[in-house]
Length: 140
Image 1: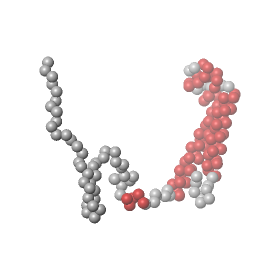
Image 2: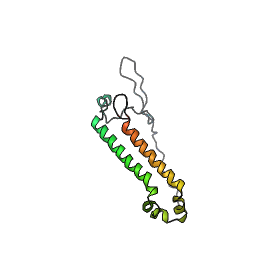
Image 3: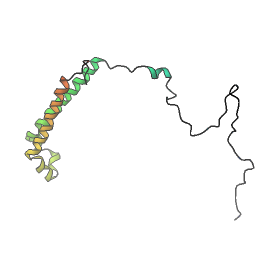
Image 4: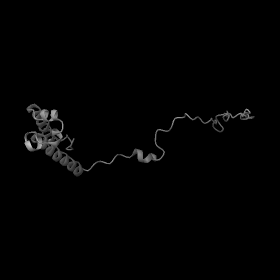
């Protein structure tokens, strides 16, 4: 089989030369470097939009979000607090019935007390969130 090599190039490829010019005439031309740093600001956003202050969330929207947070935490806390002591929901739960060891573990009084304690903790967090305000009157 004949040796199939590419012909060697006759002209070598070199980067564009740097031209030195006085300080009073045109600036010095520099070669393009692929590792140059990129600008800090994105190109797609104009500089004026970066200087604008962010929009403030309206007070009514903060209060509505706070109300919904408190209501969800109250319902969840009551459910978690009372469910371990309600036999149809806890003892006959199909999730606990499939492995026998999980059913025996879930019926322990200490496990029920820990789950109820988490529900009480959730209720306490909901009440604290409902009553807490900052110095400016805004919610946390």
